[in-house]
Image (cartoon, rainbow, N blue to C red; front, side, top):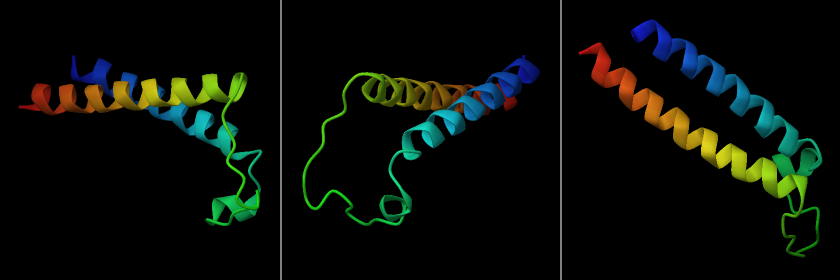
Length: 75
C-alpha cells in the first residue's frame, strides 16, 4: 500500500508541476518576480486559464490528502 501511495504522490506532483508551468508561461519574467506588467488592471481568468487554475487547486488538495494518507500508513 505504501508503494501505491508513493506512486500516486509522484504522479500528482508531476502533474502539478506541469500545470503550474503552463499557467506561468503567459505571464512573463516580470510577473514571476512580483512585478505588475498589467499596470494595475485586474484580469479575470476565462476559458482554458480558469480550467487549468481549478484543476491545479483540485490536484493540490488531492496531493495534500495523499501526503496525509502516507503519514498514517507509515506508522
